[in-house]
Image (cartoon, rainbow, N blue to C red; front, side, top):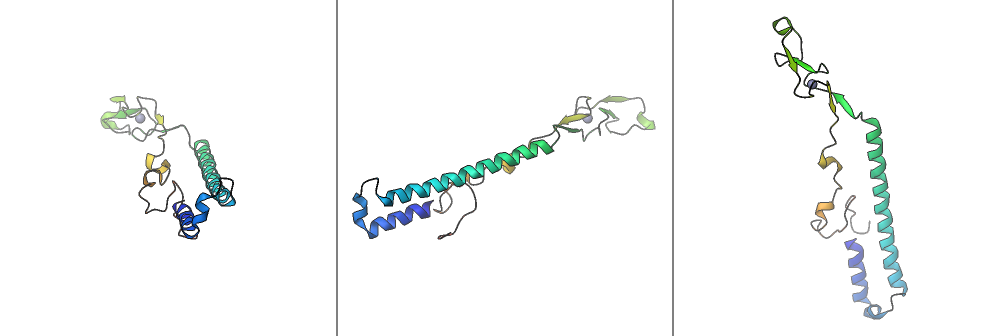
Length: 138
Ligand SMILES: [Zn+2]
């Protein structure tokens, strides 16, 4: 993004007469077309991200086995194994409240954050919000 804007600045520096052309001039249409391409690429990324999240939700069960009690819902002497030392002395599992299953946690925030959203002004002048850094001319 910044590379495109800086190229336009260089163009206006090289051809100062372009600074005074009306907004329907082809040079402005070219700028608008570049922005439209950028927005289109951005929206394609949003759609791809939404599709990925939809697939993730379809493939991940909403509830998972409680790792603390291994699905028993109870602990024996603090452990998920019923044994002779604590055969009858069990307590409800504090991890799942006795249900044996817990809600599947959401993915970590870092895994779903839109890459680059926080570095829009820290990207060394490349510009943009997401996606790989494209070298000049890319
Ligand atoms: Zn449990």
